[in-house]
Length: 156
Image (cartoon, rainbow, N blue to C red; front, side, top):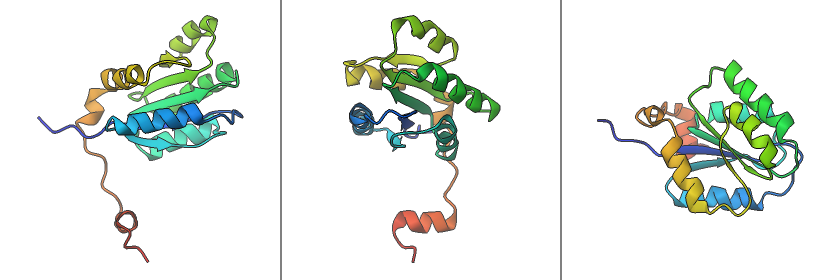
């Protein structure tokens, strides 16, 4: 059996929401739990999130939203993932998600909808339990030679 690689998680702040403390705390907790974390920063469009997820070959996407625009943004993210053939990535949400919206969010395929105050341990365990295990048994594509040199700090 092949050794599993680290879980790669994209943490994104979609929409015009500028409050990112929770997303940064979560990104740090996921990293401290042994995952590779890509944090996109604030004010991400659905296109930016999906492009980053594809480019970074992530196993999971966690969108944190407080602005109330989730019902406009989440369907766009899921449509873009589908139209790009991305169907094996765990998509999660956190932030202010009204209870009445949760069934619709879950029907979109977004799982593990975490509200404020959710213990970080619960989110970490959810990621570990729900990420597609088949993705973890495959190595990531090797870096291009120029990218490898840059990653090692030897590029001029």
